Length: 288
Image (cartoon, rainbow, N blue to C red; front, side):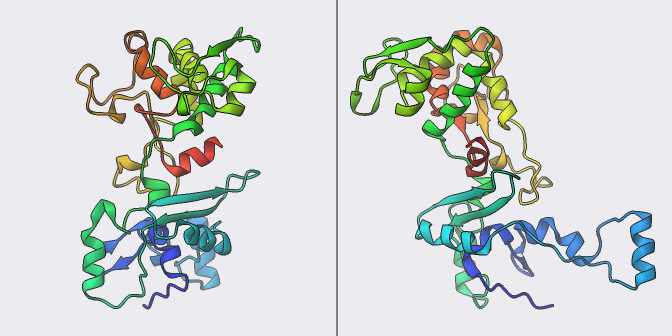
């Protein structure tokens, strides 16, 4: 069997490989039972296949748009990172580019060894679906959603932003004072002070809304290795696993209501997408 990779590195971290030395990775691994014809199928499917004389192997069509994928990969220009593009009407993944990457058509030898040796820093990592980053201000959309969903929330409620939150130490870029901020203005100006205060007031409701968006649960997506239970594909918010450097929070569990009361500064940081929030590019594309 011969494999051909016409788009080379643009698709490599997602498509993956089936290699006698480096094993199976990416979609090549996840979809191998269907590609090889070993996936279990229903009795009626088997009967129809037998009567038609068709092989058990399957053709697989992805939702990716080749042009968008190549454009997204080119835009990364070799910088470590990822680009995810979704079709808003259906949720289809149109592009999931990741860099650095590697051309799987490269002849066996030292280049393969060098790429594999980079491990988490190298092209064998799918950063679009399986690498977490601090989402920053993009997470404020989750905080805004929680605020709008809160029973009794008054749209007129706001905060006087003077460039820095007096209790939680959250600052604005260049210490810029925005003045009186309602939700509408705070979203438009990405006001840290407003969202820090909102997050602390929301408390556990922020965690609930995050769960509705898909945080703290493993996404059921074919490109993610469920069998490997890869923790990198799990986007985390207000979970102690999101930062291991604090001894005052038990590692490995989500926060309880009492944690919100005892750690308002950390909640404020999380509400603006920092410190205790980590998300994959795919997760934040779904939020947007």
